[in-house]
Amino acid sequence: MGLEITHLGSGSRGNATLLSTGETRVIVDCGFSLKQMEERLSLAGVKAASIDAIIVSHHHSDHSKSAARASKKWDARLYANLETTMRLGLEPISQVRTFEGLERLHISDDLSLLPVPVPHDDADNVAVIASNGDGMRAAFVTDLGEPTIELMKHLAGCEHISIEANYDLNRLISGPYPPYLKKRISGRGGHLSNQQTADILAEILHPKLSSIVLCHISEKNNAPHLAESEVLHQIGERFNGVLSISKQEGPEFSHKLGQGELEQINSTL
Ligand SMILES: [Zn+2]
Ligand SMILES: [Zn+2]
Image (cartoon, protein in one colour):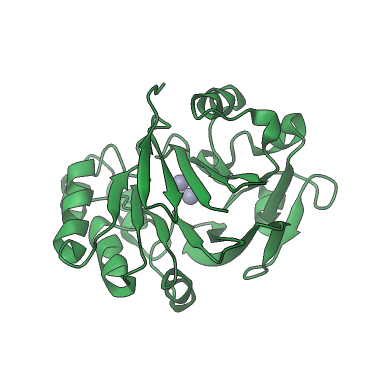
């Protein structure tokens, strides 16, 4: 049956990921303009009208920007928790199928999603764990100051993990942001540093973990090579899968779970 993961782009200017199984197509976060979403989907070879559902992790616009309009135009069900629904000014039931933390969402016979609450300032954010009909699992984790025990439990069995590596601590400290913002980013409700992400991956690493994508990399306080080298430093000797980075522009590649392969997408925006 398979589970295919395509990052349409990730960073502070927008996040969106396409999940495809044989039957179903779901967007995790819809943080680009509608036009950009449709262009990026078309580069990935997918018609926007074929999207079945959109799940929004939290209301910040880099995750939610065109979610409501896309849901309407594409006739795709929109999923979000109640806080996110209210903060986006949307109507539960008529516009959004609302969920509770840890409520399994049956999208179709071959895809379900589990929202796992994570700490993030001024937002009720969730990580999303997707499971397909063959029991393969993939995790999507961004915008959290630190992991929870519950999250670690769910990451432990995943074949694929997309996780933010937002900032390099040294770059954040010496960088251009004002002190209050530096404190917020590195605090409990901020973002994960390269070091925190590497620690999480080192703790949950298991032989079936076949692919890792580092995402939401700050353009001011981080660099892809810093994130990659920190993670490889911690898990390189034990990890036999594919490590890649999702940048702001995309899509660049798809992961086909179960086949352990990275498929390049030729054209990017
Ligand atoms: Zn974000
Ligand atoms: Zn956020």
